Length: 380
Image (cartoon, rainbow, N blue to C red):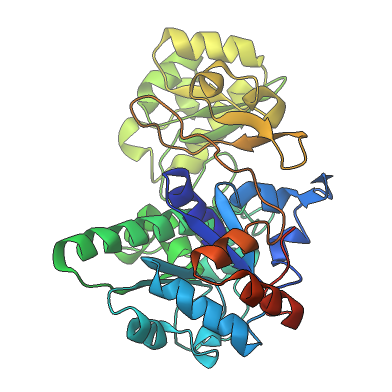
């Protein structure tokens, strides 16, 4: 959550300094799919562009002093340690405010800065389980199922960036800094805003998992995904009566419009039985002709060649620090129609240690001493 959140700000031009321990952060060691490019993991490539890299061994007092100097020259501290770790090092929120009274201190955590779960490990899958997200994504037939991507991490990253930007606006208006806290648990609840609003107001279902084709317990038919003869198709919000007429559903199997929610299982079963005998292209042509909202289910091979995805410039290929081509997911927002450029590909560990120490006022002898003591990792 934290690295991707501040990468969003780095894409916009912020000078983001990634501070890592001498052995490197977790994302340098693991990255999914067992893939690496020039020794760099996929997780490193995912959330670390446009950042300068500095290695500090914060167990050493000299490194803590470097961190204090960084705080004194920064607008924002963004950290994703377990709550309390930086406090023990003398670099927590109250310590930072003494160094720079208008500092914005942004903390990303699993469950929040305090509370009964504060010491639990916070990780996307675990949060999906605890927040109800894995349950609502599952079905009654097959049980709970996690979302296939780190959805909570990435939504949390967006909230993290938004919270920091809001704090910067407040600082511009008032001259005061503040503490920003974003947790994965709160991000997961926020992802389910519609569902929880429906659940908390009025009659509650005994099970929030869906049955069959319907995509979500609080939607009425036909909203869901249906198998065709050779694939799958999604049918969105729309008139159930119109869809019944379009597909020629027999009268005795139809559910009237006003019963689209209460009898959604019966309606979905009739639609599913009809579509499974048609090819996907036949379904698309039929639904298109009658203005029924739909989309075919695409796999990744289809997505990366999709014309709208290409038009939106959702992927861009740049050179890694070693010169190999790497394809990244672009910054998701356009500014005057343009995608922010990748100024720096993900860097080698400590690549900017020398220049950053020099910017902080350390002379050559002092820099050499910090390297020798192991307080600062030598430049890559």
